[in-house]
Length: 326
Image 1 (spheres, rainbow, N blue to C red):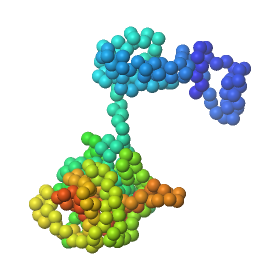
Image 2 (tube, rainbow, N blue to C red):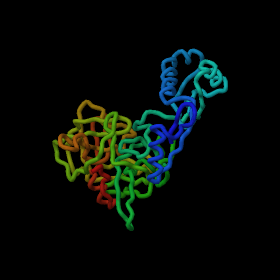
Image 3 (spheres, one colour):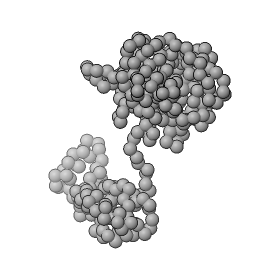
Image 4 (cartoon, one colour):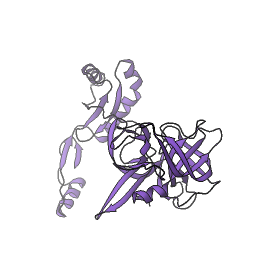
């Protein structure tokens, strides 16, 4: 599509000759006459940005606006969107061609307001349970097809059911691993996932899953409520812990746990369950990527300690592999 201000393009000029060349190669070109150039539309957008505060004083609140080259107008969404506000905007700028659109509801992407593909560290809500955290994405091949899932915590939900994020349904629990005296407290959720986990205010690609833990090593704990806390030192591996299930009231023992602590720090709170435990790759072509060590299953009263389930146990039990960005 070629747009020209004024009369429709005619053959014989440079653009017309180029169009004929494209058509000779089997392509097609359509010419359309418009009133405003792209530069003029951009100028209108800049004017509105400069006048935004003045417009707000008049009760006109611009939520989003930009050039629409298809309609040759400036597309605007208002909040609140009223007939009076639209008419006032047209009256204030009689030279600007407006079209009005419903507010799409854009907001900054974050752990609590993400968009597909979803990432480890996102905040999620189980319709059969509580608010928790998405752990890390996994994948498995079955019957010639590849499937993708998000890991989270089994103790966050009474049973199977849907999972929500930011008020929207994003997935369903399809597998649950929560036997007493086992190494697991996890579910698999079918949802749109990417090979990422949140760091602080951005997200990173996953390189791999850790193959083992050692006392004295340091990790980063990454819950959707507390956020990223690094320098958390491993104190013990292979630990068993009996914890009360918030829904059944019964005691449940999980073994193979890793105990890590950062004195004086807030490492994990309610809602951080299944937050990914990670370390960052330093140097090389994947600098800044992450290795996933496991998922949070419990925190201490003073918030400085955390118990996490090693990722390798989850992958082995679910017959999956970590969804890597490699």
